[in-house]
Length: 137
Image 1 (cartoon, rainbow, N blue to C red):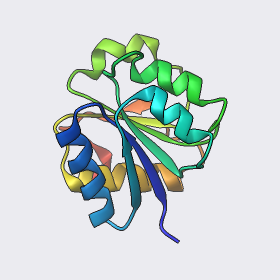
Image 2 (image 1 turned 180 degrees about the horizontal axis):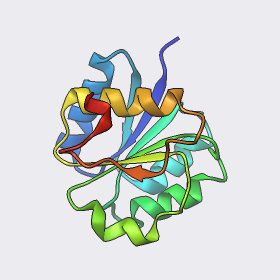
Image 3 (image 1 turned 135 degrees about the horizontal axis):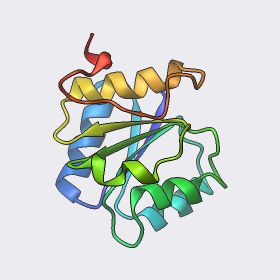
Image 4 (image 1 turned 180 degrees about the vertical axis):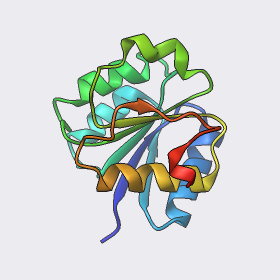
């Protein structure tokens, strides 16, 4: 069975490209445009991973992460942002997540999601700089 990734991205073109990239890499992916829609969806499904933009309407990606813990407390997250540094002080010390920068390549998404799905928690919760991304090795 394919791993299921819920994608939360308000920009339709990027959401479609991310879903298509993940499906092209063998994942089952579903995109939603709003974090409140994603929270509603989490009442119905249990994704293996969640990929979300940090800049979202109504609540940012970190607020969505905090609220999603009610429905999906062990689900790993991939956060993406053009400028993740603006959010770093608000991230928890530990968690089931990686932080990646836009723009992303298909292989970046694939490696990030697969990496999180295979980790036990020790290697999570860190910013992965594009220039020195260990997922590229």
